[in-house]
Length: 119
Image 1 (cartoon, rainbow, N blue to C red):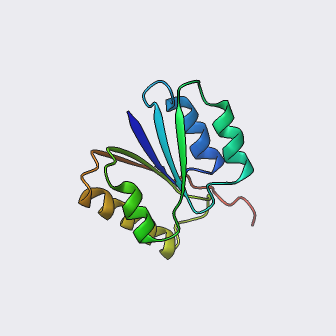
Image 2 (cartoon, one colour):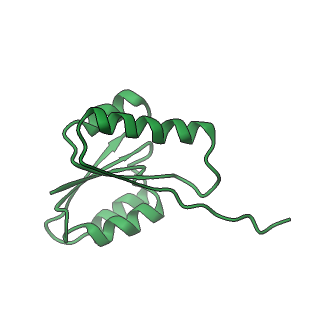
């Protein structure tokens, strides 16, 4: 079974995906605006034998739509811990609309937040 991971190159997404890869999913489609960074290649080497990780650059709605076509299970991660800004809201809303359009069965959004303790 294949898992599509939107914004999949950050540390939190890599941690979650490493727990799912090989157990529930044999194929991972990692979508990110920088999917070819060193940390992603390091992560790829750490995955279980037989788990296939495919990396795709997604920097606009057309590229995202193309990669969501045929997806069944999608995990969406925010890229940082700050409060949702308008562009982040647009991207998560766009992902949800495209997932619905393409018949995605399961869309889970992981949006951690950090409390600012500096005053």
